[in-house]
Image (cartoon, rainbow, N blue to C red; front, side, top):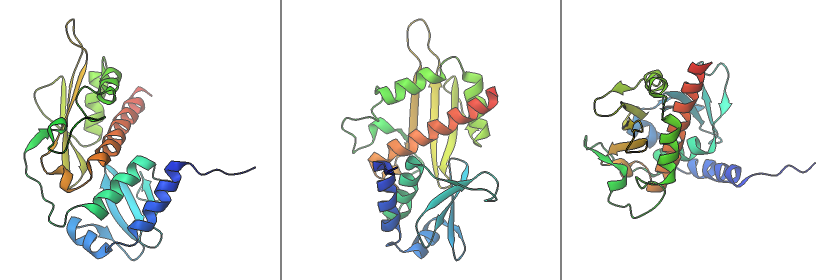
Length: 212
């Protein structure tokens, strides 16, 4: 039987090699990363990850790395981008903006009316209690304005806000994402899709856990 490698796997392998070309000491200083001789450690959407300093491979764990899982495509692409490509002087503006208003945005999957957001809003519709509990499980800070509104941490140094409104007789369910105005100093615009896809996946995972 022939084992075929998906394009996602090929991209992960390629990015691991690229990661090894970057100054890991600079990453540690920039983000105050925990580290040892073998691994760099980082938290992404309230989950612990480690990046091999020798191979670039990324793993995650829910139990302090007693058992580990290989990180998926969206996780690895986001983590590599933030570690390797962020501006040297990246810093928060502490001003939140709708991601559709970021200066580099023209059109695309992250525009407010895209199917990407609407499909997720429809999944959350009718599940406000479950969504709220999922945000709490991800260590979110509850906010006003919205049927469910929380500030969450993509990374410990990079917050994001999610606001959700239930459908009513006049309007469909609505989902709004606010990011720090300087978020594109930390990652490429295209990488935001990977980061948000993983964020929504983690929220859905916590909602399913609650149902069980």
